[in-house]
Image 1 (cartoon, rainbow, N blue to C red):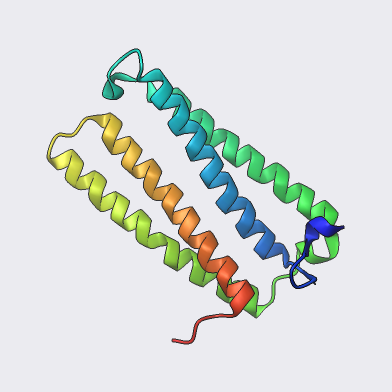
Image 2: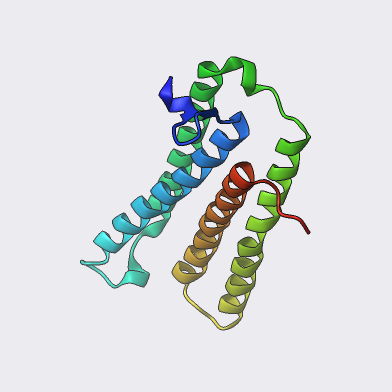
Length: 154
């Protein structure tokens, strides 16, 4: 079962670490797919006139479904670890989420300013989507680093 082993150290990854990897990889994959689709459609019309809503909803929905499926798979692959969360897991999760939330706040502020200055809905929706994606990526990085190197000392 080399898929659930961390090959360099030979240690078994915690369920929560696997979950963090899933969320980070899916965030990147979904947003990249969305960007490719929208940029591809912009060849025919100006970017702000692209019908981005279906592509955005499909990429978000597909990411959610893929996350559920992948979590079920890792739960089946390692059922003993799936429902175990210790204090360290809870601390790492909380720290990662707090770290990632900075991009949500920045995205909300950017979207609010864009709305105040009359930006097109396209840009407002896309800055919010990008903020959520960057939040997931930063959260994943913070969690994985904490699992690998320990919690940072404050």
